[in-house]
Length: 112
Ligand SMILES: [Cu+2]
Image 1 (cartoon, rainbow, N blue to C red):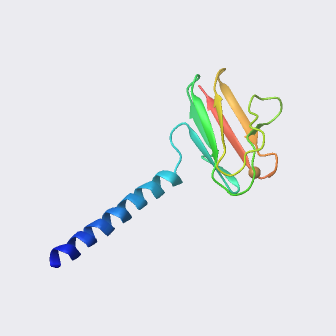
Image 2 (cartoon, rainbow, N blue to C red):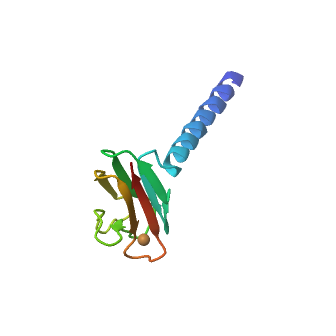
Image 3 (cartoon, rainbow, N blue to C red):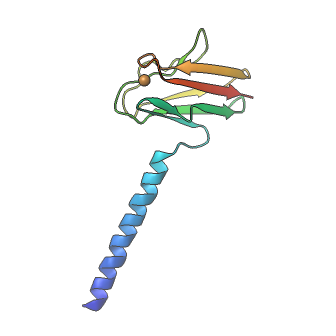
């Protein structure tokens, strides 16, 4: 009986551990990733080498876009919750972008 209780405790602890790891993984973007959260880009500025594919993921519940300021190359269209937009960088430079729905949302992609 004591052994059973011990095993149950170990089992529950391992579940909590796995849940915790997946939570952490979910809450921070990788090196070539930007998370769109309500209502900001995380990170707001990302620097990558030319040829890198950067992926934006809408982690919020509302709709957002990744849209270049001026005539830049970023154009995600409307991203619903959990949708992603990928862009493979080319020419080096600094590319600023915004969300078409939220004027306070601004981000920067630096390609070097
Ligand atoms: Cu937005």
